Length: 242
Length: 85
Image (tube, rainbow over all chains, first blue to last red; front, side, top):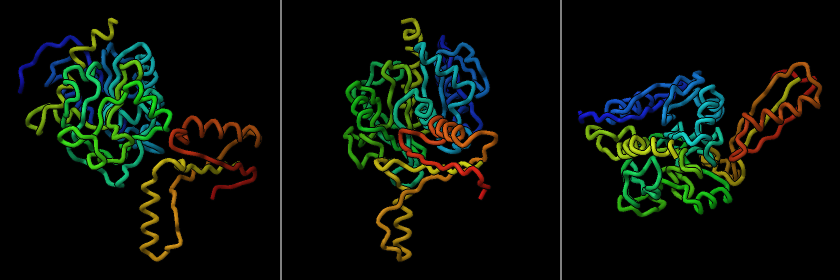
């Protein structure tokens, strides 16, 4: 176990019926990073003073109808929308990214993998933004290694939305080869422009398909995910104060 | 009153499910199938509204929940004297 640094910030991890990555995220927050942690039940209409809200992976409400379609109506989501409007940090991972798209907090949608397969594998990602509270501990165009685990992670947006995302630099992570080349071979799911993660225009709402919470300790085969958690822990207060 | 709603992936959206079904049909010898799109059928039983009002309500339901306008199109019919199939 790494020694615990005292981090004066509080993470909230949202739990819907069917969420399964909540304990993994919670473990990284309080056992690895050493920050304060609260689980937020989907019926909670209160974010318990959290500085960053994580929407973790899983199958919220069974992913019935569409991934994230029903979760967006949960009482906690209304509060998360208001929190995001005030500049609060919201971080959707895998199913959480799908929920954020359905809720309209991020543009586009996640559709079935082009291969029709559920993909559970390591991926390489090039980090295209390091000025964000989520990525400040990464270096410019760093290639990080983070696993994916999804059947519906193929990012889609209409051409206008896609070019707006590119022009405004809202693509944060792109699937790439181990040496950082963005190629179709490195794209595990058919995402347009190899998109693995995007941020809203203001820079406080991040959605990503890969699972950083699954690679935050050396025992799990990699620690690149920890950089993102540490970035948030270091920067959240600055963003909230601005 | 019954509303019958069909939700389909937009033509520009890749439909790997449809592609897989098309391949399956070709394997079975149905080689005349040039394209397959797989969508959803949703049937609603409605109470106490006029057909006009039901149409407006179902339209709102499709927009707010039943279809995702980013990736899906929808169409529906209202059957005033219909029964569940």
